[in-house]
Amino acid sequence: MDLYEAIKDRRSVRKFKPEPVSKEVLKKVMEMALWAPSGMNLQNWFFLVMTGERKETLVNIISKSYDYIAPALKEVFADKPGVAEFTRKFFKRLGGAPVIVFAYYMATKERPETSIQSVAAAIQNLLLAAHSEGLGACWMTGPIHVADQINELLEIEDKTLAAVIPLGYPDQFPPAPKRKSKRVVYEGFEDK
Image 1 (cartoon, helix red, strand yellow):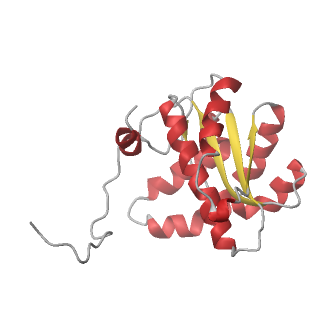
Image 2 (image 1 turned 90 degrees about the horizontal axis):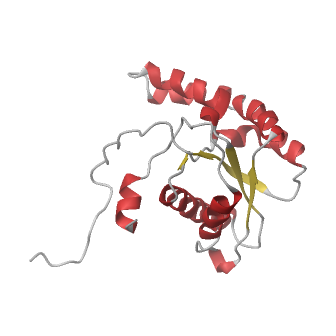
């Protein structure tokens, strides 16, 4: 798959087929995540890739995070109330994703923004690699609101949750949202 094609075709998937994803495929995807750039090359990210019974307990915890984002969601999509309802249903079961990836970063002597940007680069690699393998995924930051409960269940104390990524074979192919204009300015170039 061509890189430019992968970037333009990848979508946030919120409905998954129930079929499992092999550990071999997941290892390929996660290896590509780890090839991301990072501040000072510290590679201070940590990923927990989960399926099975304990995943269902975590889905129940994650579903509670919808209550934290609902007010902003309803405000941003005031003219499209169906979006908030669709999102509420997605949070309830994470679209039936057979796998959840928990993306963390560890503190360093550098500013927190550096660590956040580093793990974000790894997450983007993960999303593109997953797409290349025929998988769908959704980068979720809403679950950060219930990070304490997630960390308690996972017994994680020394890392900061950056995102939760449901992953699996897609059972939907969302259309491409329009790109917003005037987001890039070029300066100092001569027009031909």
